Amino acid sequence: MDIRDIRKVARLARLEMSEAELETMTRQLTSILNYVDQLQELDTSNVEPLAHPLPLQNVFRPDVPGESLSVEEALRNAPVRAGQFFAVPAVLDPADDLSH
Amino acid sequence: MSLIEKTALEIRELQNNGSVTAEEIAKQFLSQVKTHDGQIKAFLHIDPENILDQAKKIDEKRKQGKALGALAGIPVAIKDVLCCRGVPTTCGSKMLQNFVPPYDAFVIDRLKKADAILFGKTNMDEFAMGSSTENSAYFTTRNPWDTTRIPGGSSGGSAAAVAACEAPLALGTDTGGSIRQPAGLCGIVGIKPTYGRVSRFGLIAFASSLDQVGPFTHDVADAALLMEVISGHDAKDSTCVNVPVPSYLAQLDQPIKNLTIGVAKEFFGEGLDSEVESSIRSALKVYQSMGATIKEISLPHSKYSVAVYYLVATAEASSNLARYDGMHYGHRTAQKKDLISAYSNSRGEGFGKEVQRRIMLGSYALSSGYKDAYYLKALKVRRLIKNDFDKAFADCDVILGPTSPTAAFKIGEKADNPLAMYLSDIYTISCNLAGIAGMSIPCGFTKGGLPIGLQILAAPFEEEKMLRVARMFEKQTEYHQRRPKL
Image (spheres, rainbow over the protein chains, first blue to last red):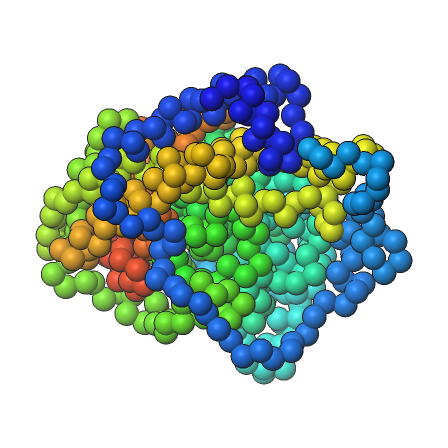
């Protein structure tokens, strides 16, 4: 793992980091990954992965309408609002570079 | 009469026989907070006026002869990861600095129905990621037994609040040890229930297949009481299992006959402090003196649990924390560029270092080309860890060992070394990975006066047995009666 991998992961995870932060992150994650590499010594070829401690399948309940939050309650924590809506930066503004 | 050092059940009795009112109780604990929380720093948010209002309502209800809940008039401190309607809920993060939830978590709803007094929100490592509260975006909580030391984490504020007698009961959450470790380091009782025993609705998610809510208390009877209130089925959490909740208090004083205790040699290896070890060995002798059989067992894959945990928990966290994008709630950057930068800057500014580190690790472990080597491999070893426990519980009732390898460490000691910090959870993590029940009870003190915790692990949904085993020890010892000098 090098700083280019870290820069790519930071972009995927939508985390803005300075060069200095990327360098520290590279060093710390390398050390953690070296530690977790001990898992490779185990032969797990015939082991089913366990994603969840409970043997759950789908859990269903009756489709009955219940109470919902009012518009006011739902908007109360909005960083920016415009009337009855959440205000967000333009998603499809042609001036935006969305290619990355 | 001073109430602050008493247990919830003692306070309840004094209220029932008319010796004290809920208002008097609230005033005494508020006064303890006022005097000592400047030093302990357990609370992020506390509203004395609101607390007194709640207490007066309980007194009024009692006066009118109305039926009262199991926790009537008893203050309960709440880890700031649990949503309380209309009360700031920050999760120890700048990201949620101004967040006020529009609904109550299931466990908060249960507390209200039990007529408990919601007694403020407690400090924690940001998004429950840490073992010391040093990752809180606000401040570090102090261990009431030695204020130069950490209280443990991530539920360090709740543990310190109970240990410092600022509240008789508290709720925390445990993803890899975040209730048991601080309970052990603060000399109190803490329970991580079986995965699915308690609803996670309204618990701000860290790692959804590992998180559970549980109690902090002075003794085992109070823990049984609080477990009865918060356990049970909730349709709003599809992983909350619909199995009946027994009365944990009813048989609590009945010892387990022919008790067989498993002792895993892997929990007594390198890194275990000698004072902690001798305290645990003495605890085992106490059980032997009551007729228990000690059986040496092996959990051969437990040494991999930290490695598995830091892949599974971070992978789940990277997905869970994707919701914080600064659009609907939470911190939004003031930088005005394109949409992607708005996300990245909001997250870069709102999340602290450890949270960013874990999102990065989890994103990497799930990314194309690495998922099989890291995430999937970890899930396979997780299966092996669970199989070890299934095998062990076929031969023994409970597994006993140390909660943590050392007593509370100094503030700053491990702050710059993430891996050393992760290894302080080495004995607690496998319980979450396997989804079993676990708790920590006080079992001794170091020569320097720091508490030591005994961990008791039990098979899924065996909380009743686990509590009775804990109670057997408590009745023979007095560690749970000690309180720190503040």
